[in-house]
Image (cartoon, rainbow, N blue to C red; front, top):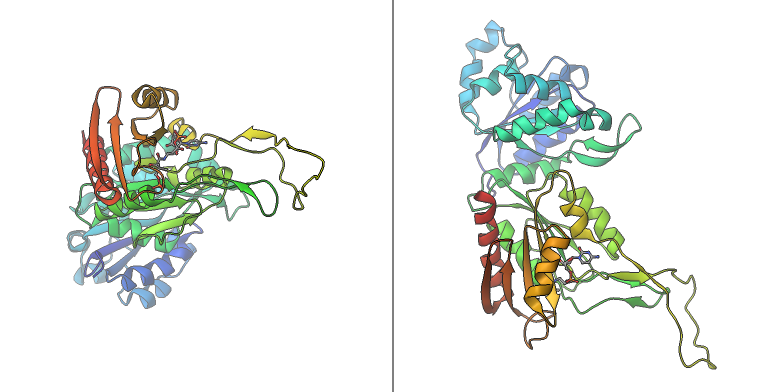
Length: 400
Ligand code: PMT
């Protein structure tokens, strides 16, 4: 059964081109078992008609604060009390600003003030408006008030610009909404995890890679989703099936992993880098298979440095709680501490890959968890159990 079964979602639609996606969102929420009532602002009605939303939701659409007919049915205070969640998608820059100011000059803002239910917003606007200091300050205020902010995503915008500001897709919003109703230590949080190896092509048939199976990262994704988090797994090539309810993004190279990480880590709460990323890649990928030179006993391959994914995420202005792994075959603790500082991590999980039976491709692992103040040894156990223990520890740290 979905965590949205019988949940009452009051969907607020504000004025923006992404309002057309709200029609699909109504259907998707209902498919997941939710009951949906729609409230539209005057600007929203310029983009999509109340009739469309009424036909899809199967309920009258609420548009006016001072409408005697509507108040005779389900009045605005009743509507505010009815909701298990108020979800505003799309939430325009103007609506976000009005929500921050506590205005009550239309039905939707009034409902937001009156409701005892949690509120979530899915921002959608031009990238310049999103980056504007006023919008960013407003979004910070919403977060301080424990209002959930879903997205936005990056990409091409209706106006032709490219950047952050696109509303999340309907299915992503349903997942994010569902995660709010799951109980667990990471309920309502978004966790992004990298896993597996990367492959760096030399020519069309050969590549540089490593022995990471992805087992540790996939186990972490499973544990995160069990703890109630909306979970994104960015995986290099592995033989594993993605855990259920986890959004899995498949990548091959370190550069692709970085692009996907930047796209999904913005606005996430926790970023865990379990992937074994190739530190270097061939400077050039040969177009044709490199032929063996019968006269040469050796060949030189020029390598260039790959971007450091976890360090890039940890350097973001709005940095998530960032966790790295350190796979070391000597000086485990000292090298791991070096990575903690150098990569600006909040936590590093040190693996001794010289120990037989743990680490790369094994079913079990043993680690030392290190942050600036403390170290904790987690002795050998299955990667599934270790993942649950690590997720519990991370949940505790971000709650502190
Ligand atoms: O996949 P399995 O078979 O289950 O094995 C699990 C594991 C041993 C691969 C895993 O537990 C592990 O230790 N992963 C990190 C391996 C590694 O590449 O460690 P590192 O010390 O080289 O890198 C340190 C940290 O920086 C890691 O979090 C890594 O993901 C990250 N990194 C490294 C290089 C790079 N270019 N970008 C990165 O983000």
